[in-house]
Image (cartoon, rainbow, N blue to C red; front, side, top):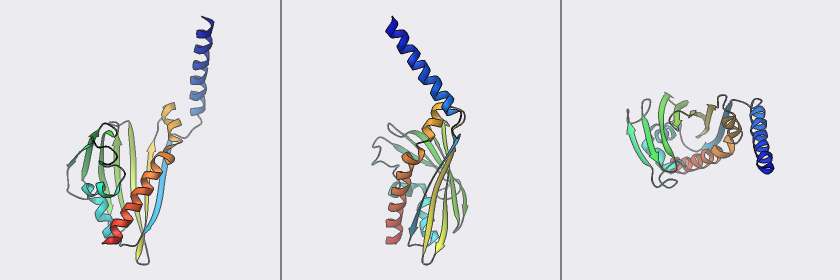
Length: 177
């Protein structure tokens, strides 16, 4: 009986400690990656605004989750275009293009886990010489949830590589055209 009491007190103490620590953690996160692509903004934007083309360059495709099923709603491309998915690995989610300023900016909202995890994403285009520096960023609110706040410390490590690989593939595709 004594060992169970020690185990209970230890687990309870760890939970309390993590909760107290989480009070001092940020309630938001941000991930950002940049890449120079030797293509004009309209060429690059064409692959971002058409959500069906995301399969060509993002890490979030059938190669990563063979069970995923994608559906598309709204506009074929641009503001109002919506992609929904459901898969064993990716779960359920939705991505919607929310804003487009030609040659400058594309914004989207990514909703994963049915509203539990929302990312406000954007692509910024900065023309440089014959190419464009593309900045892909995502931010999100972790609210007060202690586990979310602790998880938020690792968002750059989780999402950063997907952004880097996606931009690298986008670069290859756009520079071929």
